[in-house]
Image (tube, rainbow, N blue to C red):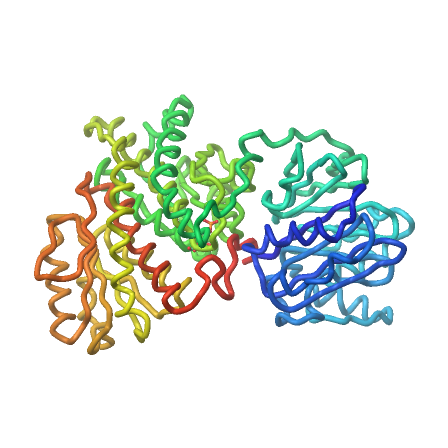
Length: 580
Ligand code: F6R
């Protein structure tokens, strides 16, 4: 989604804001802007990437706010880019103001003119209206009027920044030269101490102090732990973050297995596990696919009934939740609006909520009864890769534990990092497949059982970063309709990791080949029929998606490059979807 940065300190603000925006660009990037307060307010906004703000580093002033936008209300234009300035204030906003139309009408009735189509501009108008000398007081009044989600940074004529947060992440930090704020840790690398604002918190930052408030007044927050703040990523010699993050999959799995081992010491959680008779997994996009894989593993290993829902659907299903049911909400960022809403709903209906997230201080982790932090480390590329492996590592450990506690045998996941290493090496073979995909009209990924979930994940990656229409489909369903789309040269990728089902999947493969499909195979068994194959190492079949997904992610990466795209920054998408 959008990214916010703010700074007040002893240094010139503009270069700091621009560096921060570059670090945040992966969150959303259709337009960008900064406002700096010096002797007067200077504002620069541009359509496009942060680099389009070149020259803005010359703005003078030691207090400022900046923004990268991912359009929700209004097209990506200069007018709609943030900051929005009205009267004495400049504002940047992440989130959605749901009652913007009503508020706008109120401001317009006062004779105020709007210069953008955004919902965010109304915040600047309200702030200016309520400002009677104390900007924080004005922000508090403004927030009382807002319905929706927001992270807001605003400045007036004084050298101070005021901030507010509801359902959209916002962090503040102290550096040697001043105070910083951002919607993501990546822009706070100059800070020694970082605080994550909580729901309904406000903050006032000046050069020398950061004060945080809730409804009751000033509060003292605990700073984030060192390990949460450390490890700001660089490309480390790779051309793209996505490739770097693919290569980090073995470490991501190893760390996540370790995290699960420590987490499983929690006695209260063990009691919940022992009592669990029914499980629900929730997630969006890749996290949903993790949930699907987990559902298969839990049912297969522990014979516990499980369901997996898209968070965006579940929240409107009026779901039936049994009191004490365990609901597992999966989210890399821990900030996905739909997953938060679905998780909150489940909890309100009496579920015990387990969060599986890569961000230990995220909103999801705060609302959950138990929080299992994955060990992927920061993931910068928009497309999830190592975070998917990390989610599977903890969810498969969880499934294995559930089985063990039911006396259904022990499973060893300890070899998965090494097997992932070998799979990565084998996956380089997908580079040679790209020729068949570059000009494809559509692509099929087929599988059965848990391989369907892997196929769906492969398809999502290809759509997301290579912009190729594709479907991840249950092999047995092909002839019930989609087979009509297969024509001469259509690429079909068959995922086969389960011996008992592989022969069946092959039938579907033959049906596509007979109609001219160009078939590729990801399989745990030696290649047959001379088809181009990435052979993944044999593993416990229940855990094979963690390996089988790797060649599909790598394929999407190479096809994206072959089609001339930047796999790190897919169009129209953002790393963390904090709006509905
Ligand atoms: C795909 C991808 C998205 C996310 C989805 C959920 O590569 O990254 O589909 O998986 O937006 O995000 P989180 O896991 O942060 O809730």
